[in-house]
Length: 316
Image: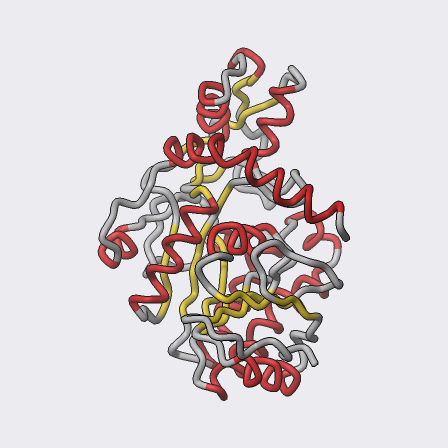
């Protein structure tokens, strides 16, 4: 049975749907020795930090209810998504299924059991014309990805008013080594490859381990509703690349400043998707970190992260 070890004595249990992905793997990396983690994955795999991982159909409400009831988690984190903008554009039906319908099914299951749900969403629910978006600003997605993630938000909040919907944008290290802007710049600059850095695309991207730490604080605070979790500042991709080059001792001359040639078309990079993080700042007892501090932390964490995941993959 998939919950045969669920009742080992630990103070707190989390279920993470999408445990093998970018955010899910970092939850295991940071919290695996502090919390009893159970992961739902698409394919059979071991994820470092997780006590157990299982393949559960996230579109099957009854299967989810049985699974969660057997574990009895404090919270469920839904980090599963079709996150590639390109893949969502090529297969909008799959995007709608995974990003729109599945969160509603998960919310229905958690609501039936009275288990809090944290739905991970995105800054791409906004069009990027204004920037510094608050939780109260009107959404206007510019892509299939943003449209389907907004649909997921709506279904979650309609089904479970006690859920938390977290809009975020994050960077860091991933098991594949190719999931974030940090990895893009580090890989290119280490190979002395010249890359473009867009000067007119701004985000409040937060280091993923800072995001995980804040998620833990928010769960403990028992917040409900919409919440923006990002860095305390916003940077363009060009500015982010310069910060990476400085922290990792790469030549910043390899990063070329460029602007988008298209103005607010669906494929345009001319956007300011920065988020106002005043609300989350009011909930926690520490300062929301900046992107610069996150980049510095990522350098300190790289070797340990890579060693952990390389060792795990070698045994699979």
